[in-house]
Image (cartoon, rainbow, N blue to C red; front, side, top):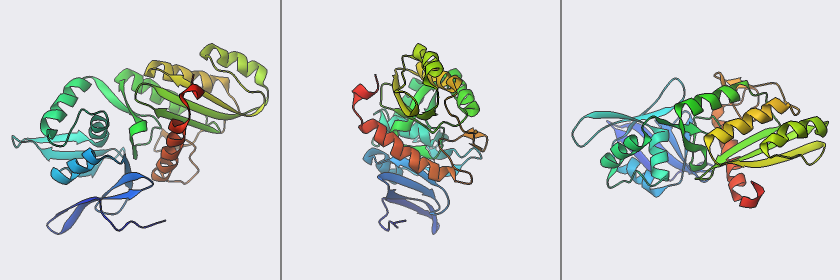
Length: 263
């Protein structure tokens, strides 16, 4: 793997490296202490400037989520999840010059909503993996994906106004399956390896589509879970951070396709 020597951002405290950010795979890769697991952010100058200007102290929770602590202009300590910070920056709510006020504004807008990771991977904090959902929707989506028997490939990407969904499966008898999924406006291209593409305008529709596809039972593999979480196309023994890289590339490919593909 290529080594990147030029640091985009780094911070030392008492000669100890707190964090560093390198560019890798077109992403800003965030490492705590310069070693260990990587968190992938979209390359965003506003986000990099925030890391450079403000003393955000990172630490990783047991559930793999990255969180920052910082002191506001009034000297009071606050906690901020990395995915909330990234989501606010990507959507133009949080800016570097007005960081403290913008974070308060973001939390006010967010209210009871939560930021969902489309692929369920906490290391993927890129633009097309984050979206707002209600806590109930987030829980329902998690319950569906935890029970999901692995398809050949399932890719979900958020495009700013809705979700693009791609399912590639092996179908041996298309007639009964086609009837099951027709209720969701989906169709099959016959037997063999089939690619199903659709779009969900909101979280509720996304959950409905995933639930319908799992009920169709089209050539599923046995489920694979890492840390009790569903992981897209993971291989046995593969680290979640490596799965995140593949997921990011799949989401990019999905976003590069014409909108008409996901009707």
